[in-house]
Structures are given as C-alpha cells and as structure tokens.
Length: 135
Length: 132
Image (spheres, each protein chain N blue to C red):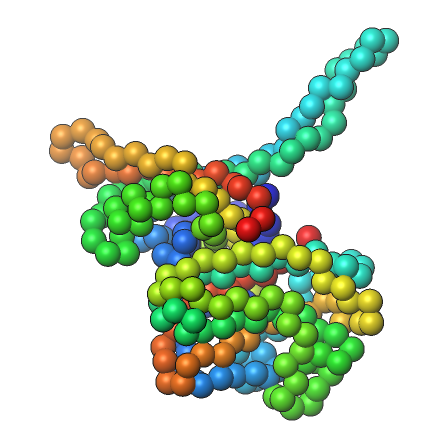
C-alpha cells in the first residue's frame, strides 16, 4: 500500500552532533510539520532511508505532539512522544512502519503536529531521509 | 499547477538512484471485485485488495552505489523501502517535499539495448504491504 509522505529530514543534510532533541528547526532537527489528523488512533506511517551510517550509528525518532509533548515545552529538553524509533542496521538501510498512534490524552491540536529527531554517535556523520504521513 | 518532471527523487533500499533514472512510474490500485447477482441490471463491484507498484528506467552504471550493484543485489529482497518525490526535496515542506513511500519486493530488472545507444535498465518494484 502506498502512502503519501512528507519529508521531515533532508537526506543531504549531515548531522555531526552527539545528540539532539528539541523543538524542531529551532534546534536544528527535523521540521515540525502539520500532517493533519482526524481523530484518536491516528494511523501513522514512518519511512527512513539511511544513505550513509555505521551499524547502529544513528537512531531516528518520529515524534508526535501530545499534551505533554514537545510543543508544550518551552525548552529543548522535552522530547515529545516517540511513535517510531528506527535504529540503523548497516551503512545502508531502509525501514518502514505503520502504526496507530493512541493520542487519547491529546487535544485535537495535538493530533496534528509531528517532527523528526535523531541521536547518533558523537561527531559521526550520517546521512538519512526520514518521512512521515498520516492515513 | 502543473509540475515539470525534472528533479524527481528516487530512493530505494538506502540508495539515492535519482541521477541514474530518467523515468519513474507509480501505480496505486485496488481490485474491483465483481459482486453482480441475479436480478441486477448493471454490474456491481466492491473493493478488494490494494496493490502498488513502482517501475523505473534509466541508464546503467556500474560501481558501488550505482544501479548495477544496487538493483542486481536487491532482486527478491523484500524488506526494502522505496520513496519517490516528484519534485526536489525540501525539509519539512508540504509543497515541494511531498511524495510517496511503501515497502517493496524487487521482482525484476532488465538490462540491454541496441548498438549505438546508451545502455538502459528497467526496474520493477512490487508493493508488499507493511508487515515485517
């Protein structure tokens, strides 16, 4: 089944930080994007293309906002709700997942916004593309 | 607004094969099952299973990370993801970053052409659902 996707992180961007969590572009991570979201148990699709990495060298998180999520926080210390966590399995990899996100505690606004974050080995260079969509 | 297909992005199994493709097609369909019964004046149908497919073509290149190595080694690999973006990618954008993604099994690749032509290849990727 094909899903329409929104790019959350450009493949040609290279990250060299030890780790990053924060409020989207403000902290240099994947953009916060409104993908919509009609109701609770939103069906989320996440895709990842790892173009260059070492095995287990990068973990990519697709995150959804929630009442206690990243948009509710004023600093870069609130990682939001992880709905997908991919770990690279080799220097080249691609992964895909479909899952319902139970956002029963979130408000309607909180069912809309999503972002991508990642952690990686310190000073390592990884290239990847992460995308996300809502059914 | 129409899109001129000049900068499509083709990602497959962790490789960016955009620069070696000059054609990409995406098929998204659902079976229309005939449930016509006696007493009806027209055929009636109901939806069945979804099916998806991507086919690509371009110019063959050998070497690490190029189509020769990637699509030859990926034949029958059924845990790969293909992502297609009709326009150039912009991080987080909804206007120029929109595309399509699905898990595929590479079912066929072909190679060959006529004398005097650039050596072409074709690639056939069949959607395989989202299970592990």
